[in-house]
Length: 149
Image (cartoon, rainbow, N blue to C red; front, side, top):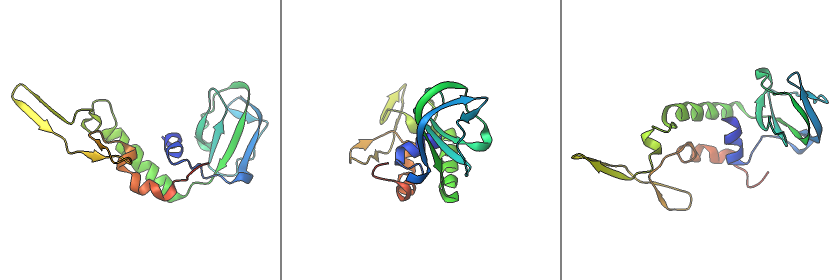
């Protein structure tokens, strides 16, 4: 979920001095050549199997032949990580395909039963019946949004 959130807000909490482009491979779940991961989170770009945000303690890298890409050291704040947990909890509760919040229907009636959902709004001002974590948490995410990477 952290990968999707960082991509949505275009912010990987990385300074230019903490971005290491080059040729890498993943052997035994570790990055070769080694990058000094002096934080809990890092992002991999350019990999076929490991693109995205990773937590060092998760040891979730998949072995992969050499790829040309970049490793970014990330420094997200505790407040942002707490927000990500809130989003993940919301997504687990309301984000499934059977969720009423994600139904594409504004109103529906059948067999003598009918209902109408309240309309949300999107950033473009258009009406939208579906609710997503992006719209639900937009005001809290705006604090961390960047215009570009």
